[in-house]
Length: 195
Image 1 (cartoon, rainbow, N blue to C red):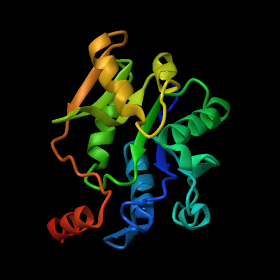
Image 2 (image 1 turned 135 degrees about the horizontal axis):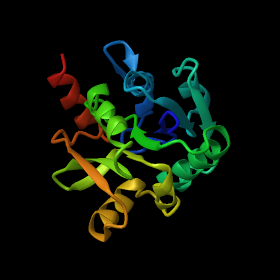
Image 3 (image 1 turned 60 degrees about the vertical axis):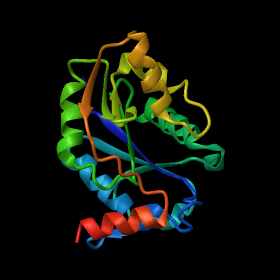
């Protein structure tokens, strides 16, 4: 099986935060640069999906591969679909993961577990108190599920649906850190607990 590739979704406009969360700094590193590093440390290939503030974000990702989502304002699903179109050409047959820049508590250990599991199952995902979500990784035979995403829901709804349908084998990894940076108070709280 080819080396897994993670789409790092970094195209959003961060309207609730009021500034680009991809460019927030944690210990001297932007969140998008951190996401690239964590994916690489987990043994996968990062591909950053750009949109809002494209050039500013691109400057933060070093030599990582990237693709532009021209329809980023239409929601997260368009970023996943733009990324999949790019991967169909560049990495056919590779397992595909989805990661976000606004989950700084997710580290390489967690992503490594997902990467390792994908050789045994069709889908490996993260489980939160509210249900399955991303980061997640899909084997090539399950990638058609990702093409079903719509709007701003992303892969989470697909994972929740699949958990009940059992069309594919899944492995779920618990993660009780539900932090997802969308607003200033969430960022302030995270910084306060990581000083």
